[in-house]
Amino acid sequence: MGIDETLAHVRAELCRLDPVAAAAAAHEPATYLVDIRPESLRRGTGELPGAIVIERNHLEWRLDPGSDARIPEAADRDVRWIIVCQSGFSSSLAAHSLRQIGLVHTADLIGGFDAWLAAGLPVDHPTEPDRPRGPGEGPTARSPSNRRSPGGP
Figure 1 (cartoon, rainbow, N blue to C red):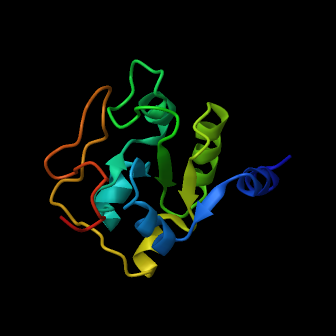
Figure 2: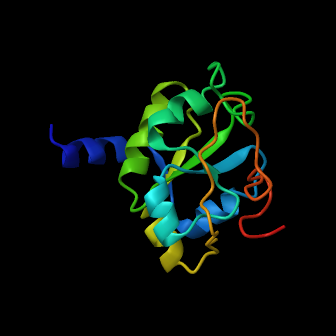
């Protein structure tokens, strides 16, 4: 099976959200946008306000509530993670991986950050991009927990 077939198979099992639905879902309790894009992309195109930044290679360890390397928001398996990449391809594979480890409420953003931008949703352009979250690290002053509205106070 090639990557196109794999992606189609994975996506058939996922909850996928368009940008407007993802922005609305981010207002719900225990729901977080997770930006898995590398710093170079975030630096060049901007960041999702309030998103938790976790680069792809650490994703499972930071979001699994049983991991010693988890972030504080990974309180249990009922948390809803909405995974965001640049164009919506890597996020589908990442969301599938999280579902495979028991995080069954995980979704991904259709079209990724590019679609978010095209929908006219808020984007931050900080001087320095947020640093990815490490084990046990909570929100930073500029990147608060996503329980607030994206782009809002």
